[in-house]
Length: 211
Image (cartoon, rainbow, N blue to C red):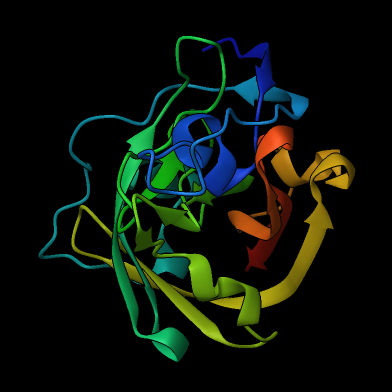
């Protein structure tokens, strides 16, 4: 399938689109501040995974095609007792990466790679939403070398290690954070820093890269 380039207004993770908007009782009620980047839009990862759950193959034994078909359904971070559901997200009506309207659920950008496949799999989550703490809120304290496990719809799991953990000012997030190509990796993103309502919400982004 021919891939297309789309220009997205991407407020990285918990402040993606609705991620920085909640109820009137939440600090995340302001409009998201767009970070405009070019993201390569690939084929949608939808439907049931094709690998039988009973096979439960080792991730290293899977072909790139098989890895690309796996649909992530949960993310587990033992260091903070995180065990959160994952749901696929696409773009909202304004062309921005959408988010899940729930503090406890993590979004996976379904137009990009699946975790473990070639390229950059993007997971995003709220820092807080409607007076509830977001599932990915603690990831800013993850240390290099700590484990994160992702479970898939086919019944398999794959454990990754943290290779970097950086916090960037909203206006200074490297463009390569959102690149979908390159080596296999997972980028978990959420909001951090000071909340400034007149500037649209949290003013920093946490980016944890897994391999």
